[in-house]
Image (cartoon, helix red, strand yellow):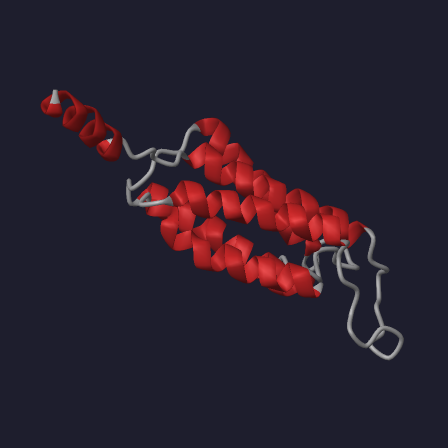
Length: 158
């Protein structure tokens, strides 16, 4: 009797759920979606004299952002993705403060790490996951300043 109980408990303890790449991308997708929604509400130019504390996102949006990162932390456990938690926490803190650029940068760094992990064969990235990586990177880059050059061909050399 004791052996069977120990067997079930030991099996339960050994059964550690591994986080999949698609789950990481689901989290990033949620963050990108809320960040895009927040930036859509911002005027093109925000003068610090008029709004000294900046413009903060709605508490509901911050809560969803925070819940996505909490779920990520809980799922990451001992997976290779655990090291991304600090970057996502930085993004959350910046988002809460309404700092768009400081939110985008850590999320882009997460994407860089995921791609590096794939190159080093630590994780498996499917074709659909690759497309999502490109889509999220493109969305984040569109948020950054300077993404709309005034002259056609600007920055492309001769």
